[in-house]
Image (cartoon, rainbow, N blue to C red; front, side):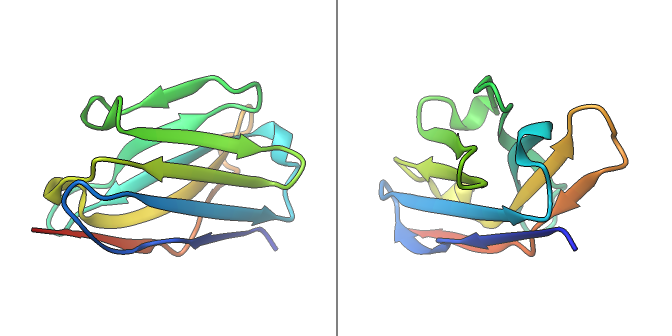
Length: 118
């Protein structure tokens, strides 16, 4: 059974930093594009950042220059370093694994809450 287990969420003040981690199991990690999505109350889930097995990254415009996504293909993990956090970054953050060819193989973690307070 595929599992994506997130950790690292929490409460932080404006301008602070958090690091989210996601550990994947029961998938051939190198076949998957790994991503972080977020969903704020009353809003649609949105892509924050993604990374291919080769290390090609994509970021939402709202987080460019502040967030960094990285993966460790040997440990089957993906991390999201979030710096200079803003109130509008408050959301539930989800880890996602999308197979690079088979679109039906699309898996989600349970989500971790990130709250940025003033």
